[in-house]
Length: 373
Image 1 (tube, rainbow, N blue to C red):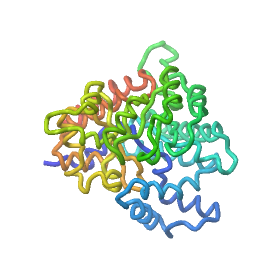
Image 2: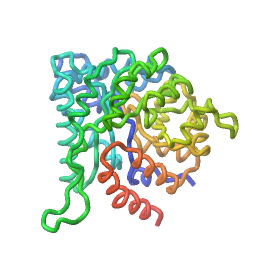
Image 3: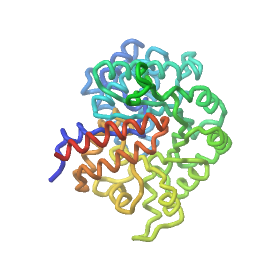
Image 4: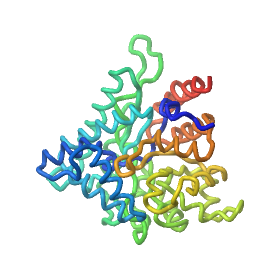
């Protein structure tokens, strides 16, 4: 019997792959368009949601990515970035998410005069405001930023410098009166790592080898998009470039022949590389035509480490609870499988370990135990 969707929504979830510019509320799109004197792609929230979903439902990654021109154009001021980041946190908390990393490409947000660092600060301000609002309402959530390089742009050292300068915020504090007590999250974890996004075919990750090599040497965490629009060779290139996690990675299934693993698949399994799987967006970009045909089931059954996320909530008209429900219903997963997915995703997060450990011990396991009653 499928798990009720209300139950799935109530379970604590971990989001490792969600793009800030792909998760705007439809109503926010309308507000910001009108503020900027731009005609919105719909008269109300429903029409805007339909427009983005239909435009992204193209069957190819380049066509899917073209919809971001609309959202990025609305994210060129500190005020707009701050609002969208704050709403990201609020929407994650409303979806039962207790740990979330938002990824975005600062180079795309300097068209109106913001510097890269000013743009990152604006997003940080919004994340801090969102976490404060969630905690004021009695909730708990830990969030962090992933700064994305873009495959089709020229490599530069600036994002490594910003990430190095903005990491290392105090992860938690004890009760001031006793010096003990449960760890409490800071307003956010700040910048927690780097990513590489954008068109995969023709733009190898190795172009950025120097940047990611320095990042890893300095202790920065790295996740790279690979294995979505290209196959195992792209995944191998991402791993050689320093990837600790793979954004999508689902075309790894092409390196499986029955129970026999090819060299790339064997490496991913051996090193417990987390695959950040986003089923609905993969259907839109042509990885599969249905959830039943999606590689997530075969990869899970073969022992690969997975995390489920929403990727682009606006373009895919989805959320992580919906993604989780779709997979659970199709594959017959129960609460135990979802707990396993959430806990592994949490262990693969890039925020400081004390923050993640507190969530695993105090939130994830008790919540799932309660759900089994």
